[in-house]
Length: 140
Ligand SMILES: [Zn+2]
Image (cartoon, rainbow, N blue to C red; front, side, top):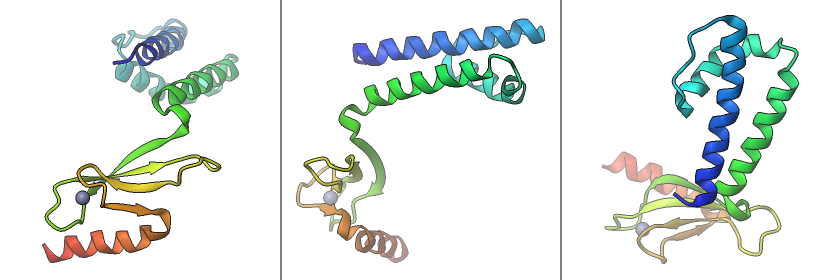
């Protein structure tokens, strides 16, 4: 894991643990385990209660800020990579990944294959690609 990712992960843990601590203290509950999934589940479980708490605005701001920071570390330059499925290329064992670039980026968004650089689809071909992938599922 890169240092920035490790640091933001640690910050997220601190923020969620802090707000979970408030819930535990004020509602006199058993604290959840100090790990991200447990803390996130715990806070979701008490989301209704938290929204009516006087600190609700602070909670929302803090979680929004840390989410934005985490997203900028996970997706530098705002380029997102989304796994789509298997490549429909003949005899290709690759996976398809949508590379979504922000508006105004010098490079266009596209769907690329993890194996062959010949298997790439610009956004204008995505509908055709979707039909190709659906057709592939029906024939096999
Ligand atoms: Zn391919």
